[in-house]
Length: 479
Ligand code: NAP
Image (cartoon, rainbow, N blue to C red; front, side, top):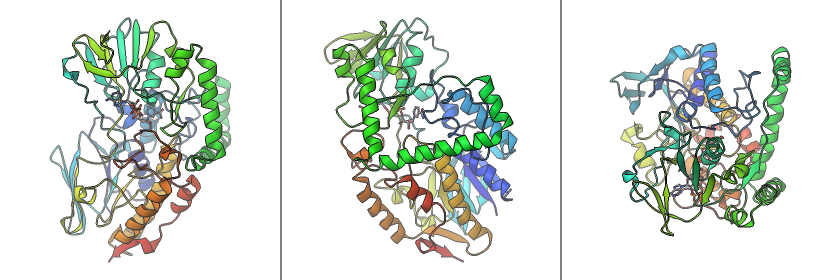
């Protein structure tokens, strides 16, 4: 059984570890970059961290007693992923610098072509290509005329001086909020261009002490317990988020409102920062100090819409020119690409671009009719939100492994979901999405082109239960 994994990010490494530990060792991981880590390799902006507790944003089979903070910085997460790959010897399976450009199903195998001219034939493909990796460049007039340094948040240019510079940041998502607090004390002037305010959930992040870490090293069962407790806590949150009227959503709304009322003293600024939609409608932003940072003397919250970008800076609708040396576009990602632009051709020449002509979707977020033996981790319509995508990917992998086992054991040679199962899942999913907090009236990357949340709309408990065992009636199995 030969398996290709596409992408050596969090989910690709997870798949490689779990496959090899199950004795499926004929595995190659194709990675377009020269280093593993996915999102954590690409995003190196100042202030980057994960807003999911590190002891939960960890593989359950490789917990880490050495996290420095409850919410550890991005470079620590990158080092952790490299460490896991080394410790489980899956770094040896990775072909770096090889972007898979085509995957075609012929003669009951997937034929892969890479940018470097490699050809491979495999029985199963796991696409672990991530969601948030195609930068969304804003179509602001004059963007190409800016005379200073300009880059997207995921392509931070570390050669550019921030200290003493006039820095502009466009956007107020999780990325921009983390960046603001890290940059404000270094920049001479920080201008934050806000199109829509965000609710901010307060979250302190004091460093762990040596004693705590030593205790986890000596007592791994305590670390396991901490992971389990956090998992339950976040499952409770995830269960609440799919019911806009749940007590969890009320509690979050109260916490966010208090945070704004207490921390922002200037009433004019407070109103500029007050969203007109419900907390957690957009992905909830978590920060210990965003409000303190935007109230610093050298920081300015600009709420006038951007009219255009000029050589010297950003011109807003009121005619004012904001002079800048550096402009950072924290404007998010194109979230409907998934493994594209890779060409994927399934059974009978069916092209993924046809299957996804309207928008991407997948049965249980994992597989697509007529694309046999092809599965995705963190694919379309999966659980997203303020909880651990590692945990989600682990559950998805355990499900996928059962599909792989059916092919490996010879019970069938091809497996893909039926169109009936796909259509029924999608109908029920869209219906359920209407009562989630994401549907309560805001613009966000969770919404598809129709304004319907492109996410798992049911409880986390339901997701966990679905991932336990595939329902065979939903699958087209061919011998
Ligand atoms: P985002 O949440 O999509 O936010 C993009 C921001 O850019 C929004 O404020 C948006 O305004 C603004 N924007 C987009 N186009 C614009 C334009 N043409 N003019 C002005 N403003 C524009 O992107 P993100 O902050 O990079 O976060 C994306 C996701 O990455 C997060 O939701 C999260 O899942 C993940 N992330 C996670 C962490 C973490 O700690 N785990 C950290 C960073 C990112 P509107 O609100 O008006 O659309």
